[in-house]
Image (cartoon, rainbow, N blue to C red; front, side, top):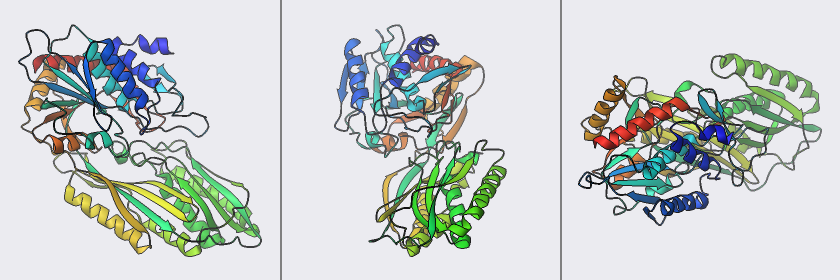
Length: 484
């Protein structure tokens, strides 16, 4: 399959992208991919440097005669979200991504593809290696650990970049120019207890599993109404505990703060006399979930099976407080932007719920392009869990990127796109958290635009990138660099 991908056009972009699929690069594991970029710079005789947090900056001189032009920063992030289907054994720290061509799309077998943001990295590398392009001085900035905490962007120092025009290649709809993005904040919530409750004599243990949800990017896909595995599971748990004498022993749902949770598993105990009724209840809930999400989710699977008795149960008060808090937690779209139709302003993603000995962890990512509404949403979520007795801490907060409708680079790119494709590009604000907001905080005078090819379902194993749109974005990028 590698040979097929490497024949796609533009060939240099797809060759570099394929190389990236062969390098394990989940967030927090950047050494191999940064070494690959530094070696790339040496091979092509380009100056490169790496900062304290691991970001790589590669410099390319201007085309002869164009050294007086303004320096352009091409910016993309190196890490990818490691999501896979349960049925496969894939080690994201060791195994390459199994990418393949499916008609007009490039996909991966049962894992995330890493086109977010591998395609952006590959586009920049293709520019750096091409000796025939027309452009002024270029700085290619490759940031690390964007997907969890945006550590690379937060670690940037004000003297690291000379350029004051930045082209971020991390958007996911060709023909659209993004001039702003939402900010976000993590809520890290913990329920602690000293000792688990003993099993109830005569009760049996059952493992309940929810799989098959689409999941996706908690910013880009949040408006699509996809089911949240944690919300569905706790809806069921409240019913079975209230009406069937069940108790909760273990819960785990979701794995990434910025991915809509696709799967959840719980271990419960209940009186043996109620087991037959439980099978019927699980089947009923599967039908309810499928019916309620029939136009969106096509493969919901909700099942139960006997399992080994757990060592202990969650204390009943902790169990009830957790369930009530999750049930009351706002999730999904909270408000919409008035100035940009069909664009989400604020949202909440109940991303992770996980129990371990003496501890239950809940992680929520709140987003908003309004700082005041982000604060209000976080306060509301904090209140729900605080009333349930949990400890709520904030982390990973970042500001939004405020749009500038008078941006010179926006005007130039609009004109360039229209000359190329004889239609105007859309100008939008994206609900996902781009690094532009953080970079703007370090470089307040940076003129920025974000763009990219068509990506479907990032942060999920259904992730795919449209082949033809990559060619269009490449042509647009080349024309833009020539025009600046």
